[in-house]
Image (cartoon, rainbow, N blue to C red):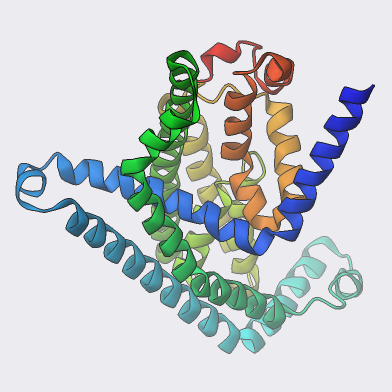
Length: 344
């Protein structure tokens, strides 16, 4: 009973810290992701003999971070400009929506105008786009802290191994912890690398298709596809519906909506059901139910960021819990097949 009480108190304390320190922890987590990406690019550059032999390590690190920061800044500017264009055309979109409603009314001999008007009461299209722009501006403001966290993580790499070694009085304990950290590192590195490649492929195909269809702000919708596809299960569905429904109010016609919905659906299906299983396989070994619960739970704690990070965070929990006898049962429940020794 005492052990249960301590567990409840501990979980409550962790949740409280996660919620209260959200503004500090979220940039730190993004800093870790940036560190992982930086390490991957650094590994790629080291395969080139010129960079490995002629360029000092600190200069390679600086080059990588400058490229990443400029890339993020350029993407943020493009998205902000796309949103500005959407806001400028908001009145035309509203009139096109009326045209769509009239088409539906005449086709099906029903009056949807009144019902949709009631449903859209309080729905402010320009306000939503403005909130998205503010969110992006806030994220760009956190970019300095995110980069600083990643830089300090890079600077700590060399001494981290020695620090961990001095924490333990036996070689056996040290080897166990380093093996666990190595497994976490390998799993997250491969997850981020493969997932990012798939998301880039999805948003690139989406951007080309939406541009061909003449959809306004195609880059913005492609970026949403990139971000939303990190959310397991429901992300790809939302990423398909958003630009498809927007095409209704842009063109004022149902036909482009159907074409875009089917086209993006085919892209999402092919990448999600054909390419992703071949690249990702069963490496994460997470229960589908746990994946959904983690999505909802982390979404409640950290909002959209929590939904994006729910899967990698749960994988880390699975690996850590599997290493200790007291929490091994929890790891088994989190896993897909109960084999917690085959996480990666």
